[in-house]
Image 1 (tube, each protein chain N blue to C red):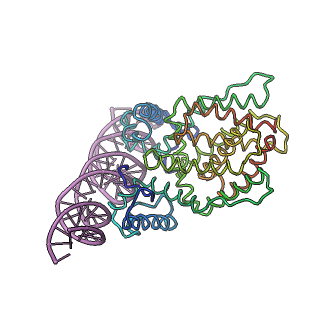
Image 2: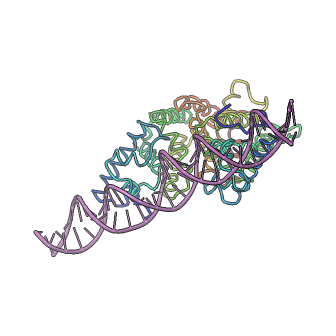
Image 3: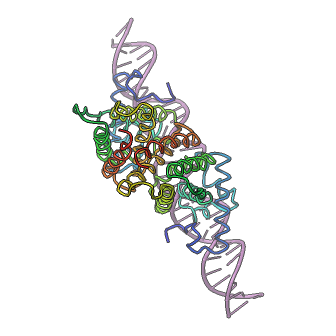
Length: 197
Length: 197
DNA sequence: TTCTAGTTTGGACACGTGTCCAGTCACGTG
DNA sequence: CACGTGACTGGACACGTGTCCAAACTAGAA
């Protein structure tokens, strides 16, 4: 147990704590939509949730932790949809990057905030960073399937996953929208898979 | 002219101002090496430079601006070396990603700080973000050369550049070292160029 | 119903960030 | 040398972040 009570359900929160956490996270989503990720403060989130700041900090180590947690939940509430049979890897990957781009563009403030917050060094963010990273890898691995020669598969997987991370960073920096990111990544998928399908 | 006197030389700083800026940036590098990017404060940098905090803020809009500026200078003091004749694109790109990885691993604190700071939204960071982004693209474009078919070249360039950005983000998140990043990217280059050389 | 223990609270705190300002300093010009 | 102007200063400020704590509240068990 870290210095903060984790917000992950498997840590054994009782019903009362679970309700407090849910109120905080819901308030986080609402406050983020209302004022954006820079103007948001834990105090305003706590007020919106109807709890004290001290209670908010019982569950949220930091603003970074809040954003990482919200992003993780956003990811989990948007699992990768199953692809129809008979679709090759390039198509699956293309669908995936478009899907992920839409998921990010549904909540651009959260995506940008999370990109930044996942670079933070506190232990609660560490855990979420690992989970989120693993989820990304899993989605790309599933989409890539076994269509690539086994000797180049790890490098292809890494190329795609890094390109996705890079695109997320670029969109977060404001070079283009998260939605446009999907189109750019579709072209990248085509280029990467050209010699590797 | 922004609300802060830009630290870029072409903005016409006089000799006295130029000296003050140089002292601040040198102090920034030293303080970063001494205490790391999270513990560093503009106040300690100012003290190390022998100027007041208010003076430091005359030239530096924010801590983010300081890191972006230091990173830009680091890039510029490490221009991409010329490659010998007769080297193909894959080899040039491989050398480039290794060179860039070494450049980043020379100053991991700065690299991690800059990755985060370049996500900031203040105008002084905007300018540096554009410059740094353009420098990355230019380096990859030069290394890629004309060896790739013209129809796929933009996507290949983007794939490589995004993979580099993604790797930088991952290293900044602590998934692996900046030096290891070079080896990973070398494999990625090979995979991407496989069908595109 | 009472008791106990865990949860939450309001308020204060230390610290950092960036801003502001009247006064001082430094330098160039006449 | 005196003057004017821009650069710099010390100190105070407002605000946000995260921590701490004694007291109050809540819920479950006996």
